[in-house]
Image (tube, rainbow, N blue to C red; front, side):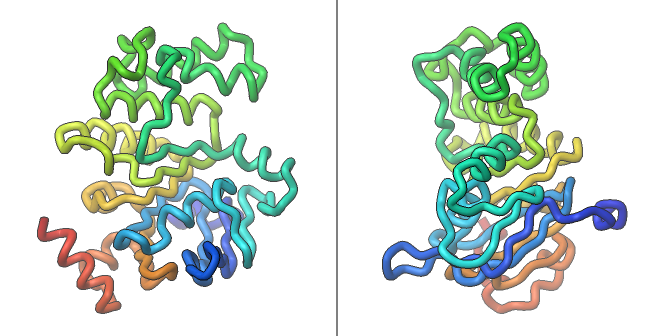
Length: 252
């Protein structure tokens, strides 16, 4: 599987990426390459820079040093580049960020109609397909407040996919959910991972990582402490810090 992927150019290139908030260093020299179609899982303790890093990939956070290149476009102060990258990058957050005053269907069709300039009929047809795909076609006319957290997050995934992105970014997509709703969201993400889209996922869900990740990166204190395949990370972690974190997280 990986051999075929590696013939291509990386779709995400990060070289020595630094980010600081006043005196606090949030990212300290992050370098990583992601091939097209790879599923990358980023994990680590709170405050380790995971969410900050994933937000730099579509310029929700600005990096101060180093290079980030997404699908051949370097993220810089050039607003056009930022817009081009955001068109190709779907993002799903911890909180669902749906528009509460719009029904599910309009939440999903808004961006394709306004940004992609799709006719309403095309956008609605796509939205119906996506709601089917995430398992909630019957919720199209409801408002977000009428849905469970798991359903809202599945709408958020459908909304991100409606723009037909090349890359999907997930920032702890299940952390705000009740335990019984986590599986329904992870099932959608597993199906998505197997469909061949490039995914970068910040998560503590190690079962998901074992099931679909090509590579895992352990972050701590703004740095990559260790990376490897799930097999390497789970069976032979090299760094003591990784071993300690995994022993804490896997014992729960």
